Image 1: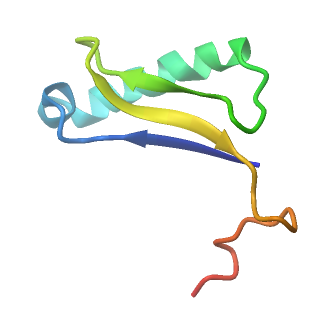
Image 2: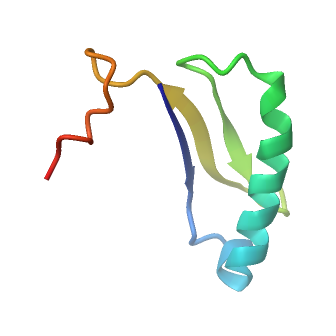
Length: 74
C-alpha cells in the first residue's frame, strides 16, 4: 500500500506561510488518521486554516505484484 498526501501550494495561506501551514496540516492529519481503517480507498480532502480545500490524502494499493511501481523506474 501507499499513503499519498497532495497539497496545492497556490493557496493564499500556503503561499504566505508554507512551512507553518504545511506543519499545521501534517499535525492535524497525523492525529486524525486513527479514525480511519487505513485501507486502500480511504482518503479525505485537506483544508487550510481558512477551511479552503487545498488537497487530498489517500491510500492506494501498490502494483499488482505488491511492489511500488516506481521502484523500478529510471
